[in-house]
Structure formats: structure tokens, C-alpha cells
Image 1 (tube, rainbow, N blue to C red):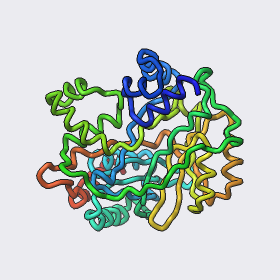
Image 2: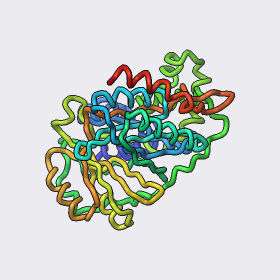
Image 3: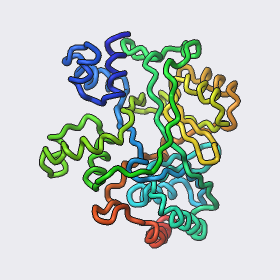
Image 4: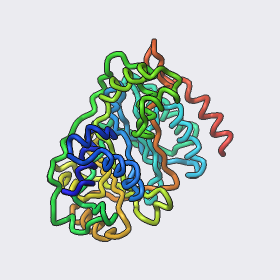
Length: 344
């Protein structure tokens, strides 16, 4: 295995800990630093922390929304939800003309949340919606054996070599870690945006003592189950790859077959066992992936918009250190009314 592949494999497990990666791989620490800070970014790779939201006491929900508003107006509302109403992610489905959204909320707020969604229908913001609890939404580890890090290209013989390690299904049970604070969640949010942040930088950003940051960092980092290596060139990504959403029957053999595709990014399973997978497929080899997915007999395929899409960090602004998570949905309708009047 090449030095870069060794470093990337250790990076996904440990995060950007140069000394740990160097000790585990035998690669000199100066080389590790060069690979992480210069080589990978030049190749179009970014690093993000994948979080088990269950350990924050949150339950994930898949909500597919059929809007009555135009996509341009709808994203204004979804951005508001992403800032203040527990929305983690949204993207517009280009074929179905619906928005796929992921909310992560305390399970005790489920009734209020559904009432909130019903209000969106009553206000004619939505025509209808599809609502399901998610057993999990998990990132799939990057297949380092399918990328030539020296040449910066994908290898096209991936279908002849199955993924070596099986990706287990791990349900995200909403069991909040002990002593959770808003500072913990704030640190986690910053790490999700930039996993290379150090104690000193976080101390300066959050105006807290370095030892305070270190203590909270060590506690909250236990919620990170993987450091995500994502290939997505920052400039004009639409020229290099296409995001695809696949819905399938949750047969173990089919799931494993989809995992063989090196461009798979994440998977989700709902409470009624619908299975979804998201792929970022490079332009070269695009037809091959479509043929492979088609032969896998998946139920449905759609394309995710890059223009109408956004990710959001954990909502530290919705956590009260004395009371816990805040039920913002009880006050959400007033904000919706204001926003609709501004948008329509």
C-alpha cells in the first residue's frame, strides 16, 4: 500500500492527528503533514467529522416535501429551518421535483414536529409531505483502493474488486451522553465544518481557555464515528461529478453490492425499511455506474441538485444548559407566516 493510502486510512479513523497517524503508518510526520494539508486538498478532497446524532439525544427523520412554492422561494424557508429548526440537510430532487430533507430532533418533540409539518400544508407552503423515522443515516468509508493518489484519478476497474471490509449497520439510538452542554455542541459544529481546528484556534474563536476547550473537546469527540474523506472539487463541481439518490429494497446482498461502488457517500434506512443511498459519481465512468445500479434492480433513481442543497451543523443555539433541547416548533408557525409573506 502506498504512503498516501496508509495515511488516508488512518486519517478516517483518527482524524488529523499527525503524530498518531505517523506512529501507526510509519510515514514521517512531515510527510503526513504534507499529505493532509497540501496533497489531498489539491486533489479535491475535504475532511469532515461524521457525527452520531443519537449521542446528542436526537432522532433523525427523513421528510420528503412537495412544495407549492418555487424552489427559489422554498430554499429561503429551508435555510431558516437549518438555522433555527433542527434541519440538518436538504436537496432538491430534480426528477421528482421534491425536496429531500433530514431533521434531527429530540424524540419527545415528534408530535410538535408533525404538527409543525401539518401547518406548512395548511399554510400552502407544502402540498404534502412524506415523513419517516430513520434508523440511521451513516457515511460510508472511502474506498482508498479505487483512487490513484499519485495521478489524482479514479481507477475504473472497481467492479472487479469488492470492498474488503463489510460496513455494519449501526442504528443511531437517541441516548444523550452525560453532561452535554451547548459548548460541547458548538465545538462539534466547528469540527464538522473544519476538522483540522486545534485547541488554540477553538479557544480563540470561542473565547474560552485552552484547557476548557480541551476538556470539552475530549468529551464531545466521542460522538464522532468517522472522519469523512470526501472527493468534491470546490470549483465547478458540477463539471466533475453528479450526485445520485437511489432507493432500494433493503436486501443485505443488494446493500453490499451498492457498497462496492467507490462513489457511494452515505446510506439511510427508515423505520419501514426503505433503503436510500447517495453517490457522488465522477463524470468519467458515469455510464458504468448507472448500468451497475440498474443491474442491481434498485426501485428508484433520482438526481440531487447542487444549486438547491445545503448542510447544517448541530444546533448549539437550540440547547439550553439548564433545560436541554428547546422545542422551537411550538413557536415556529409565526416565523413561517412571516417568511411566506416575504417570499410569495
